[in-house]
Length: 251
Image (cartoon, rainbow, N blue to C red):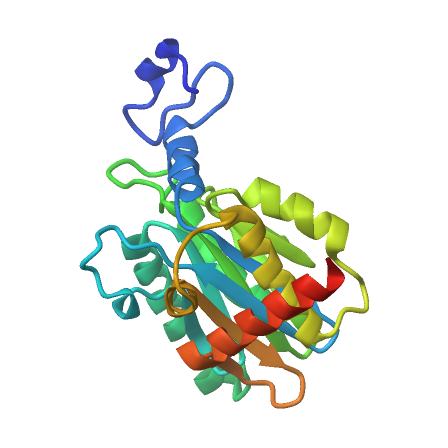
């Protein structure tokens, strides 16, 4: 992927190649592409985030691995890439959200939160002695502008989305969403689309229903209560069974 001649320009983050590329940022992006998949879908009445948890070893307790996390009452995030890097950024985002509440007596806007995260990411692409954050985040929630869905990448760039995916096989899932997404989609349909996207990437994997429930983590927020909820394993199992049933009917 990276030609041999590039090796002279990837020794430090501050060195541009003759083509204007920062190879360390591209390496960090590659780390994201190898991370377990996370998806997000925006509906007219809410946002859903879902992620696939993969065990690095058969003895690992998957309950200790977190794919979808809460930032504030009205916003959550999904991770693809290095979890240690994500932990640092999420801790910072949580502090920033509380600072905004204390300073302005209102929840932080999703856009402002994403900009703050990306400012930190961008800073780590232009100073010696640091490296880029090898993680992308999907940030979803509801603010005064309605449902919001963003992604951040290691360069510090961000985009708003209707439906998207990060991590392994994300290109395939985005193509799938492009075909299936509908503008007036409700939250229940968005949840099913998110699960269908993960299944599209994972294919026909073996495993019991219990294992499938543990492997997928879901968080969502509805305009009814404006609070981001992390679903339990039982709730995820029920949604997976519903998804399988609807899939058989459509077939």
